[in-house]
Image (cartoon, rainbow, N blue to C red; front, side):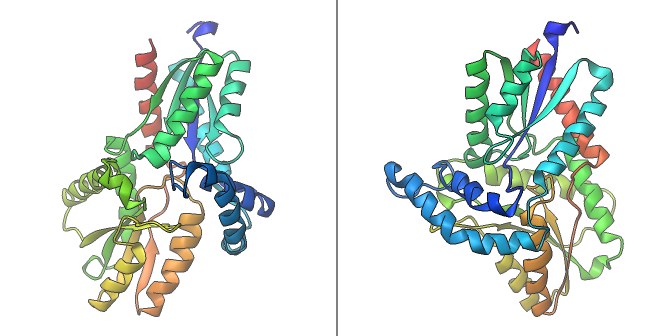
Length: 324
């Protein structure tokens, strides 16, 4: 490729507070987005977001304190970017950036940096495997607006829930997690981030894509032998709306009541460790399981696993072909 053909890839994710002082402004940015949770009339969104972020900040700080005081999502996403850059070295002139929706480095700043670096072809790669307007949709809107503002030729990868290498990477984490567990005595619990139920009722494909991922993983596991019983649940509810269920907490308690004594939680909608895995699953849900006489283990997050990086590489190369 010539210099003018240099291609930039921006790994796009939610973001997270990088210090205790960043927690309230991060929450404010999150709750200010009506695409996630509409808070009353539109003109009240930001005032209510500021109020809610203040009310939640203390409890959220306590959660982050148990995982080091800040979110590791930026560090891990940068590691993913470095691994992807290395995987693309023999495929052309690629630069890989990180852009976050609700905290630094913001998507607009990353697009601007790519432009300063001479990038004229830009690929936005959503690190949400499953499309939802609340996550991928909101991120795509920001990415498209920034790319259009700076005049960059761009494309956006919005969903890859059934990519074979992504499925294979999940299968590997499950097989590793099951190694030290008796398969006859364990249930699999695929836990995805919840969404307001109204999104699904209005046609959001998120649940269909989550179930598509689980079905693909289950088929792959069954090809190798007997499969433990499995379930799908949804975690991380927040705000006064009806949420998609069943919740992960509800399923844990229900399984305990049926005599299940071991579960392996698979964080199916997350591709890196952050507060939802390190605190919500590893601390809160593990404690809940223990109080109900159960052992809870978790499959490792994908982070920089080679198969997962290979999946990202394939997605980028296909998108680059589409750019011409």
